[in-house]
Image 1 (cartoon, rainbow, N blue to C red):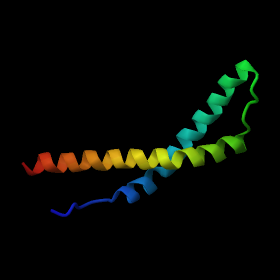
Image 2 (image 1 turned 90 degrees about the vertical axis):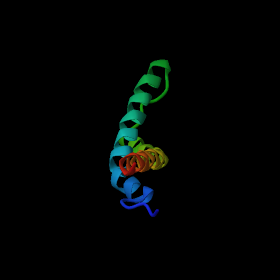
Image 3 (image 1 turned 135 degrees about the vertical axis):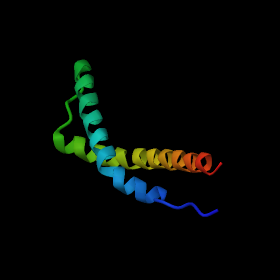
Image 4 (image 1 turned 30 degrees about the vertical axis):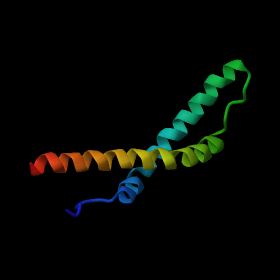
Length: 79
């Protein structure tokens, strides 16, 4: 049976701004925590850059998980 609905790539593209934003905030707060031991605090530009970089694979894996949950829900609904 062919799966209807969004593909994993479409889900990832739709969720990427949220994943990149969450990763950006986490990178910035992690740099604040590391500043307690003498590391420099990341600038906003570095935080955004690293957040966009880290957010891509994180969003892809999350989209795969969401697609799996959608497939499971479709199988339960067909039974």
